[in-house]
Image (cartoon, rainbow, N blue to C red):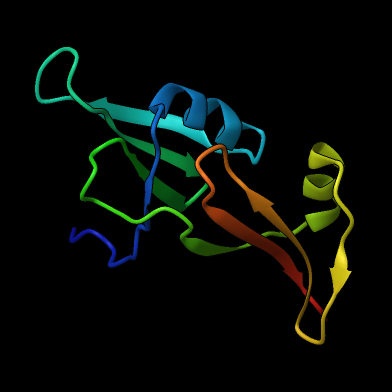
Length: 112
């Protein structure tokens, strides 16, 4: 059985443990963590169902202020968890969030 093809965004974080806690509010759970040696930067995978993100403390892996779009079935639950209003667009009901490192996540439920 061959693995499925997919895209996994890599987001730059300064504190992987803090980032994992923040992404848990979005329903992501930690899958694994790698460090080349104790005390070196962490590289972590978090997942929400089949959606995965890599969070990297490595300086050259990604740029701050990255934008990722996350399509969900219930944007209202996300908006309530973060205390933000939902914007109505022609294609989706959306919120935009910033993680502790300034990465932007646009989270939306498609309009039927």
